[in-house]
Structures are given as C-alpha cells and as structure tokens.
Length: 195
Image 1 (spheres, rainbow, N blue to C red):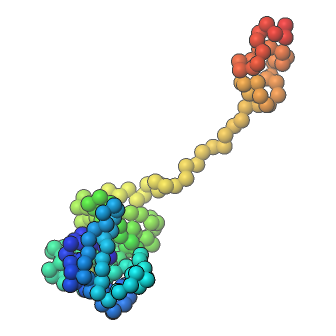
Image 2 (image 1 turned 45 degrees about the vertical axis):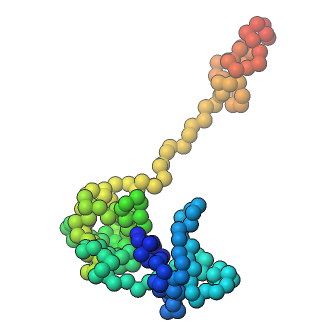
Image 3 (image 1 turned 120 degrees about the vertical axis):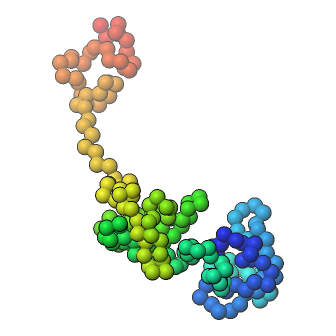
C-alpha cells in the first residue's frame, strides 16, 4: 500500500485486503519499522508466522472515501494511469503508463506518442490541465523540449584514430624518419647509452 498517511491507514480496527482479494485483514496493532522503511502490521485473521510470511511483499488495498480522503483537484495514482497526455495545441503525446514520486512531486511516465517514452513531473509550470477523472492531462510541451535529443541517447563519436607509432616506445614500429637508436622519453635507456 502506498500512502501519505500511514498513521490513519494502519490504525487498529481498520480493514485492509490483499490485492485482488476480498478477504478482510483487520489491523490489531501496527508501528513503523525502527531501522528502515515500512510498517509492521499484526492482523486478527493472521495467527501464525507462516501465514504472515505469505503476506510478505504483498500489496494491500483499502476502501477509501474519495470525498474525505482527497483534496479538491487531487487524484489517486491508479486514477491517473491511462490518462491521455496532450500538448497545448491538442496533439496527443502519449498515455500515462506509470507514476512514481521524486521528493515532494509526482512524476508520470508517458508512453506511446511520437516523442517516445518520457517522464512528466506533475508541477504547475508544466501541467496546465490535470483532469484524470476525464482521462486528460494537458501540458506545455515547449517546457519539456520533446523535440530535442533524448538525454539517454548514445553519443555518436567518430572512430578513434590510432597513431602509427607510440610516444612511449611501444608498438607501431619506428617513427617515420627515425633510425630506431635515439632516445625516446619513457624508454629504459639514456641518451648516452647506445652511442
């Protein structure tokens, strides 16, 4: 379960459900993990450690009252999924495929449009209309610079030219115009040797 209010969601007496299941899980006790993220929750219906292990890494769901749980203009992440993202000119840029949080801002992953996949921060400077209840998000695409090259595109560099001789006296044979017996920096001999 993803929540901004774990104290409310995990209060004793609240009922959760394993994702996709209608079987109730009534909270008896709950508290944050002392040395890491997450919460430890004890359920009335789960009497053994073996039964509790089956819930490890499981997603939990709860019934919510949208009118009391959300501020006006806010949406749950699952409501944003599938929304069509359009530019100010009405051109479709893709649909929301995923949502994640960075700091205090939500970011949606947009896929399926001509610009390819891109991340869209849900902030006022970019998003002009946020209406997941209508399946619509309108953005100022000029701010996003979607016409520019992808930031993770491989950089094409010309092939590296290798010199025919080495300044360190290794490989490549002799330098043009050398007799091979003069001193080269980095060689083991000295100018006096070999003379």
